[in-house]
Image (tube, rainbow, N blue to C red):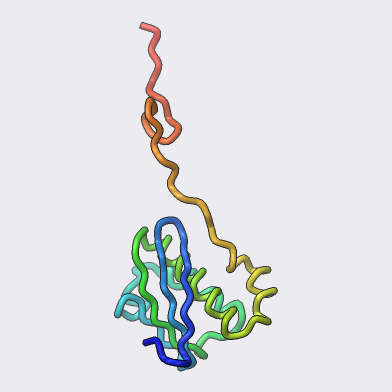
Length: 131
C-alpha cells in the first residue's frame, strides 16, 4: 500500500478520521476493503466524498485506498473529502488556490457539544414549574 508512488493524507470531520492513500491509476476507490458503492448506502455520501476530484476534473486519474473510522456515514464522507483534498496538494501544490476557493482544505470543526451538569443536555434546561 505504501510504495514510492503512494501519497498519504489524513482527513477529519466530526469524530470521523480518514486515512487516504492516493496513487496514479484508473479511478478505483476502495474504502475499508470495500468498493465505494458498497461502503456508502446513499449516493449523496459518494458525491460528497468525491467532490475534490470532480472539482479539479481529475476523476478516473487516481486510485484511492481509504481507511476510515468513527462517526456516521455523513461524517465519514466529509473526512474522506478532506483527506482527498489534502493528498491532492501533495500531488500538485498549484491546486491549492482552487481547493481553498472550493472550501475543501478547511477542517469542519463542528462537533457534538458536551452535556453540561445541571442541564438535560448540552444547553436544554429542565422544565421549570412554580409549584
